[in-house]
Length: 340
Image (cartoon, rainbow, N blue to C red):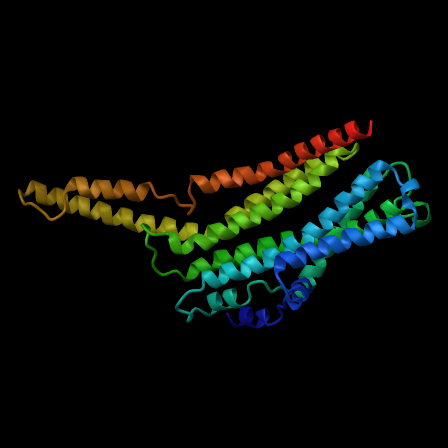
């Protein structure tokens, strides 16, 4: 226990979140400002460098996707850290004598700097593989032979890849922490699971953030040569979206399962007692039909604390990338018709 507590002292708030929190103003306005600034710098440089004649339409489209991915990955990462802290606060137990649970709440949104660096390096290595696999007609990093648009892609690729890799790492760690908070629940009312909605809310948030990135990334399918890699990464994103939904709920699921087992045992005891009273010709306070109805009510409670609408929303989240791809195809065709 002491080792875990001492180890938590090495945790720190990621620098990205520190910078974001240090900027005054509405978070949405800050995010839009970052996006506008990024695109303004790109187009201004493109105009000054007279890059239109050097770049192909395909390079230009791919660079726009890189800009979108960079903006999205940065703020999805920040939003995940912030939402995880909020979920942990909402689930903070009133009895804080459980030191491990207390530290799980206090250190939500904080991580080891070296773990985030390692996650970022992994993302950069994945991006390097992606670049090599999709570049067939030139040297990927021969800077003097690269157009303005491709130079931006080479710069932005490692940046958004590092951010998304950190996002996926944080998603797993924060989900595990939320799951651990369930260990501090001593009693659970199966007929009122509303106090544990933050688990479901965070699970859906995780899935939505992963699906959002996948939806932007799927636009690469509009260009040739990306099909196989997109399929591989789509499977990876689906796995992380599922983990993001289920992992925060795994701890409370065990608690619900245990509570249902205890209620089953109580129902069995009451059924036996009522049966004995019936055989002896005595009338008890509880009827057999009442006990059986309550037993059925308990059995109908799901071990996973979400309902059908939650599963529907999750399924819709997984379909977002397909909708994004369809929208991209329609826009591309419309632009071609206008320019023809």
